[in-house]
Image (tube, rainbow over the protein chains, first blue to last red):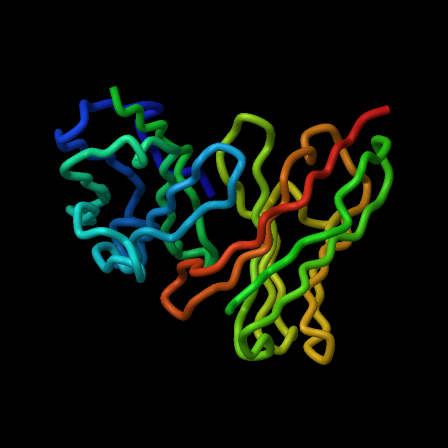
Length: 110
Length: 118
């Protein structure tokens, strides 16, 4: 199972909006609404941000939103804050009956 | 409060073995499938292994199949990963995570570091 494709890095200034894409195939993202997103600050464990494509996890600000179109899912962050700087990973259920992760995207807040 | 605490990470020689543990608390452990996910230094997350809630079904990533064995003891609220024939590419932080029904991980442990080197 190949990893989902994410851009290696994105950046934005405080207050701006950014979008991170996550491209899979018809064997994963394109077939199932079982896409989730995780935030990982340096030296810490991943933290669930979004599940089932667009549902925010408990305590996640509404500045974070998720969507999907075809084989590509997206995580959007509006009103960027310094604390949003982290690595972000997408994940999807697959026809193999397991989960596949994206390669990760480093978000830099300028 | 849900807690997952991994242990057992260590420095091991290539070809060696290691057993990781993940102690769960704050929830009904026996009701959830569990995952092991690893992260090589400076790299992304990689699926390692899954076990069903009662332990009767197990799955493995291609890179560890035949070398690693996942198990659980629901009476002790503990998840295990027996790792064998370790290679340099197995090095990294190993996380245990709780799987929810629609295939997302709502809780993760803090991770345990496995170093494979002679």
